[in-house]
Each structure stands twice: as structure tokens, then as C-alpha cells.
Length: 187
Image (tube, rainbow, N blue to C red; front, side):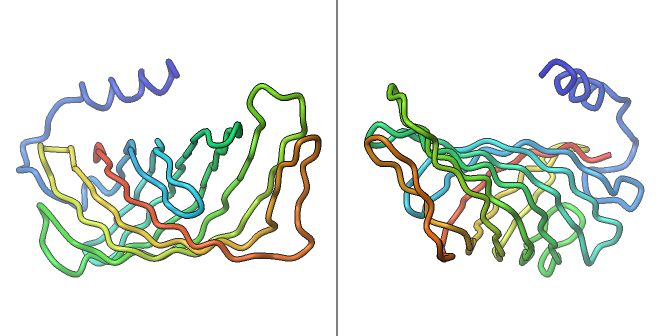
């Protein structure tokens, strides 16, 4: 945690450039933090982050990580999603844009019994996603972002019993909706 805080402090404390707020080819990279909500099978809050690269006005890519967790019926359910999203700004300009997104990810899914000495159910699921993102510069190198994304995951169903954890032998499809708010520093 300390190295991440040190990097963020260095980025924020770096000398400001003379240019006005807005995207610039000179600052194609960004690092951001996420707060989000996951809905699909269960609803849970989440946190995460991203690294983005936008080499030109018409295309960018984000590598991201998000974690969601909640407790229901004596089970801690947590999902850890790692993936990427391509985005193509179609409306807006240098200071703000709206863009469709599409990409792939994996979901490391866990169901841990709370207060019971029983096995953990776990699975790795493959996902495709598409959505809409909006980004606006709120300061010289700082943007606020809002994403609405639909995910489709394929994997095995994991179930917890009183004394056991099982996974199905067949692949199942799970739809998930996600809303994410982010702040990013561009450099």
C-alpha cells in the first residue's frame, strides 16, 4: 500500500504543465482508482484501478482490476476481475468525451463460509464485456470517469453445502451489470 501511495503523491506533486486541461498526445498514459457496484446473482460494492493508454484522439485501451465482495447467508462472496477494455471516443473533444467500450476479462470467483470450517468454492470465469464510458477533465491532469458495462461470464457453477463445496461439470453463462466511477491522473 505504501508504494502505491508514494507513486500517487509523486504524480500529484509533479510540476504542472502550461497547457490547458484536456487530452494531449504528450500525456497518453493515465493511472486511476475505481469505486463501483456489481449486479448479477448478487449486488456488491467494489474497488479497483486502471492503467490507460490513449495514443491518439480516436482510440484508447485500459487495463483494469476490480474487486467486489458481500456477505449473504453466512457466505462471503468475492469476485476479482482483471481485464482490458478498448474505447473509441465518438462524441466530445479534448476536455470530455463519450465512448463505447469492448473487451475481455477473467473473474476469480470465491465463496467462503463465514464462521464455519468447511471448504471454499472457487472458479475462474472468462468474460466478454461492452459498455459506455464518459470522461471529463476536472483539473489540469485529473479526469473523472463514469462507466456502465454489461458482462457475460462463462465458467462452472460453485455451490457451498453444510460440509462440502462443489463445482458443476458443465459451463454456465452469468450476465453481470457494473457501474464504475473513476478518477485518473494523466501523464
